[in-house]
Image 1 (tube, one colour):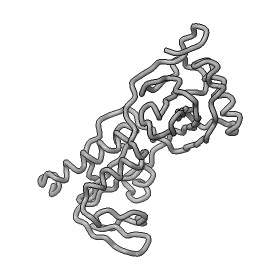
Image 2: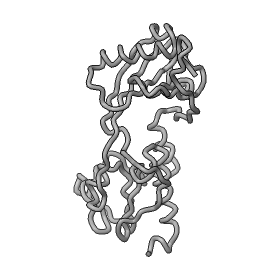
Image 3: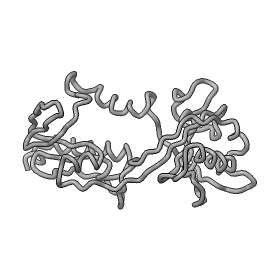
Image 4: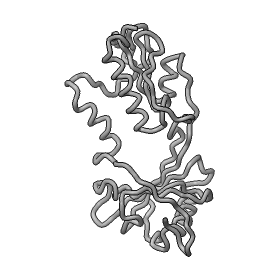
Length: 236
């Protein structure tokens, strides 16, 4: 628990891991195990045809099994059977701090039900490569789309965090604010993703089918891959 003046303002919960090279390292690690030439980047799919996909370049790629593994909006654009999800927005405010206010790989979650800040994590406590020596990278998440500019949002956030961590916050330096309108799909109730063939030879995978997270997206893709390795499922 953190909080000035005896006020218990946040609940600390366990945090997972961050790739050394950033989130782009996740697909990079997956693709590294595949044969050369099996992954093509920057090839936009315009339309899915029976037994094939057509790229923006005009190229047509034929395959007996097609997996549309995109976000919900992308899947809905390619497949009329898929309904585009609603989205949750978030604003991520990043600071450079002389020292970590937490000191361990833990996410601090606002437990008061009030204020703008939803959670705080010191990313360099999880992955030291995310900040230079002698500095800490602090990430602050604000849910929704705050109707104020970045300067005002930073002022409000630092004011709240001073009640969490004290006057040390005054020494933090604002780095950048990212406003992500389509941060996560609205997905309730949460459930383990099941392989979904929407028609013979066409499958869909993504976090909008299970838990809205990177973990949910990977679990969904894994479930489809396992189904495709079972001949009875493929030919059903």
